[in-house]
Image 1: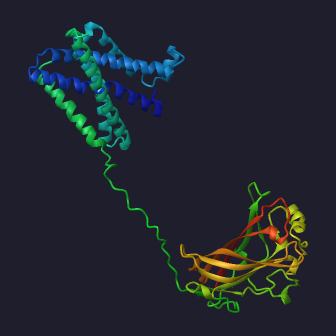
Image 2: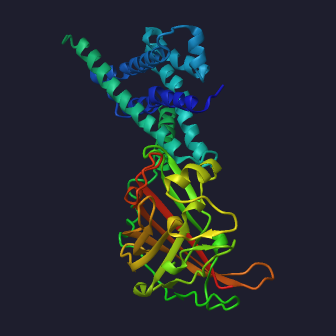
Length: 170
Length: 266
């Protein structure tokens, strides 16, 4: 199913939209548990995490729709997708908009682990000599860094919105 | 999730993230580029003195023009605007053809000895050479052109089989007046006189500047045959054919000439 360069680009898209979430999630959960942060801000922060993930998934959906513009058919979509299963898995992040899944933040974390492993796989391939192209690892890391930044921005956005709404500031 | 599990996961994730950054570090931003190459040309000249003598076969101190492996080529833009028209002269030599020698010779070989030259690698003031071509021996590979329009356009006469025509209408010759070092390369800058009648009433002598490249003397030996030495001289120059009365619109004003002369001491 893989189609060289296009497949590689789609891998980078997965990394950009989903790989950074796992680290951010686990860091925030750990900090809040070890420091016993129970303030409204921290509670809002933790509750916003799955929303950020859902928002990133929505952005990914937007990218998919842009890529198949103007022929919005399943046929066109399936023709362009090099990793349909991974794409479907990525789109499952949209379920985090549903309160049932949103309340269990660990689901979003487990969901994103697959993409983190995709990132790890690239590093291991390079380290074990299966892939000699350092530029590819560099691309992986660039996408991973951007993903972390994306989630930071989304987290600040969602937390601020939730926090100010709870404070009834707007 | 239990705290321990969270911590383990966190450590795992952090380790892989940090390792990823370390592994992907290409050091492209810290590895210095090599120093730029020097702009000063590296010029090395030997001390070879290469002379034709009397071209006595077997005398390794006398250098002979290897005409069979030499050539004089010309090129010009077709109609002055398109791609190159090219050709070579089948008959040429390195002899100072004086007026008394400007006649026809019934021979298929060289009519005159190729002895009018000397090359001093490290003393260009002593270097000189003379050369000539038979205009009607221009060979473009198109017989219709070579024996047809080229003859009339260049003001010469058709080829007579078995005859070397060195008459004034069929002869273009060069004679160096000054050879000096090129300060920017291993080459030499040559000032030469080109004498050719073309379509004019009388031969015209024009001073031109060209570039001479010396391909260093090398000893060669093949199989069990006796070894010998070879060297090459390559001269390039350009002239305006309109100055010589050539009006053909098929060719450009400027004609490039390249002479590749190979010598040996067999």
